[in-house]
Length: 129
Image 1 (cartoon, rainbow, N blue to C red):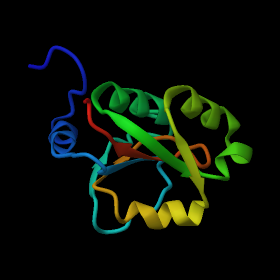
Image 2 (cartoon, rainbow, N blue to C red):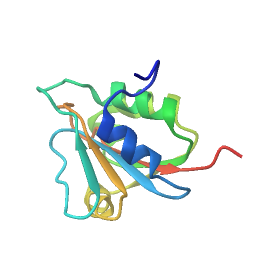
Image 3 (cartoon, helix red, strand yellow):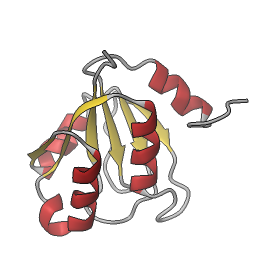
Image 4 (cartoon, helix red, strand yellow):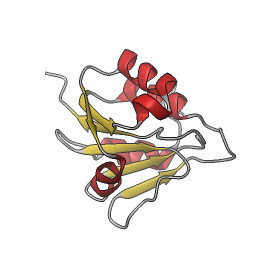
């Protein structure tokens, strides 16, 4: 058994397949997920697990060189916007509709139980060297 880190076997396998420039979407429970990317659905009940719990777990495992959020997050979910700004090096903003469209090109979508608006982020994988 693993000593630390993410214990979810399917999520671990998907994370191990990621390479430089691959994108991972961490989604609230309402984001539509189009066909294409692998999906690991962690949603258990509304709010469990939270968006930030999942983001923090992934950031402990991945090298992230930049991120993308919906521009609407600043007005509609400023607490989440600030929490992401505290955790991520570079954050680009696009419209929520563009973020939903971009999800189709992601390598992986991790669905959380988060039930607050615009709690979605696209993480672009980097390299540790």
